[in-house]
Image (cartoon, rainbow, N blue to C red; front, side, top):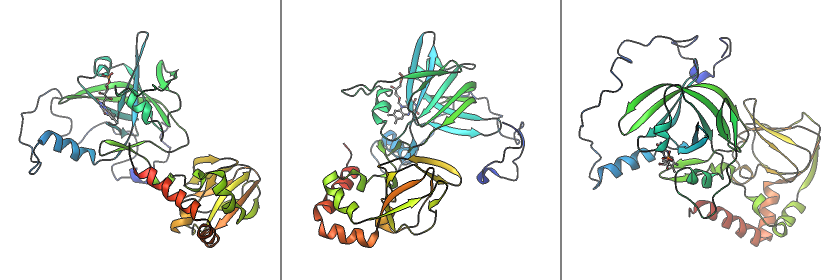
Length: 324
Ligand SMILES: Cc1cc2nc3c(=O)[nH]c(=O)nc-3n(C[C@H](O)[C@H](O)[C@H](O)COP(=O)(O)O)c2cc1C
């Protein structure tokens, strides 16, 4: 990474800037393979301390990745949420792999591995690579970058080469120097408390209604047009309107980063129009745009006149809350 690339603010610490080669005294001095003596673990009055410890760790919400590598002709993938970013300069990441996992026998210093960050809706894929087969195994397509298999359709891809490996109790820690990093648009799959979760703010609500129920809602809206480059919605302003794109494309951006590109038929502002909280992102017309907007007041009147649509939305929300 070039030295003059600006780091995000959260990395702008007094010690930062430039390549940090050394480490403060006391860091990195213990032999990594020294096995620690067993010490008591206080988990309160729980019956099963191991389970209690696991559940405690499970409170830390993470994304989900598939760690991939190739050994000879064989491609191997393993679901992992014990993934973390370590350093920007040099670019380093870390994965923690159970010593019983096949992946543990494949990763060695010098070996390359991929980290594929899963998107919302890829929980089947996650289960598949966690050795929990579902009835219909998802078809996985790999493409090779730097001789490393990467899962097609993941939200972000990294390729790293193991530069250090450490003893980590019943896991091994593999520190990888990143050689390749790409991200796409979309929302991540989340894992919390032993189950998959999703970013609730992104839950489609009105857009999940059947065409019959949607019709009266859209009929109550007004049509608006925007030219390419126009700011349709700005972060921080009140989210008083629901938008449905009839023609054209828009970019959803935050801090100058494109989060999503929306197309004909897509909705935005679905949740904000109901909770009235400020917009969390900018929406900019990428092409000339024609859309229907429905204000909160009109929406309230329409839903009062169409209780079936209101009920269907409650059903959609209930379906999101319940986990199979
Ligand atoms: C959401 C999720 C996260 C997981 N995270 C890890 C992890 O970080 N490290 C690990 O070793 N196993 C993790 N596992 C378990 C492995 O995916 C599982 O043991 C897998 O079958 C090992 O594959 P392998 O033996 O074929 O390499 C996770 C499983 C799930 C469902």
